[in-house]
Every structure is written in structure tokens, then in C-alpha cells.
Image 1 (cartoon, one colour):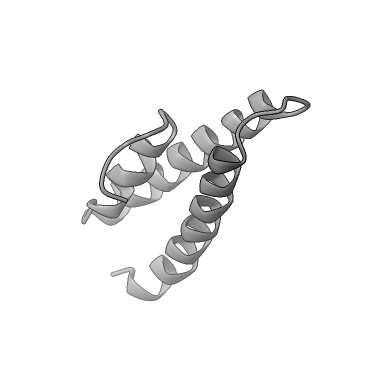
Image 2: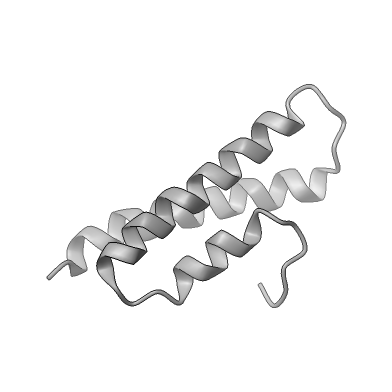
Length: 74
């Protein structure tokens, strides 16, 4: 993901570069909320499939980050 195309992507990109475990956990929650809120906004609309696909892919990425983050806690 080279650039931010949708406003909900910025919190996700911030999580990818966070090295502080506490800030990382908070960032995951913020990114998750941003995605969820956008999904709610799109509910019942005929939004572009591109954005929906990007949301689904990013949700999978967040799940992976969340599950792997437990292994690296100090």
C-alpha cells in the first residue's frame, strides 16, 4: 500500500510503523474502529467494490497483526 486512497487507511498505516507495544495496541483499536465505522457508512449503499475489497483485505491484515502481536509482547 503505497499511498492513502481512503481516509480510513491512515490509522492502519500508522500501526504498521509503530514500535511501542502500548501505542501499537491503541493504534490497532483506532484502525479497527475506522474500518468498522466506514463499513457502517457503506451499509446499504452501492459503494465501489474496490473500496469494499480494500476494507476486507485491511481487516484481514489487522487480524494478523493482532494475533501476531501477542507473540512479541515484552
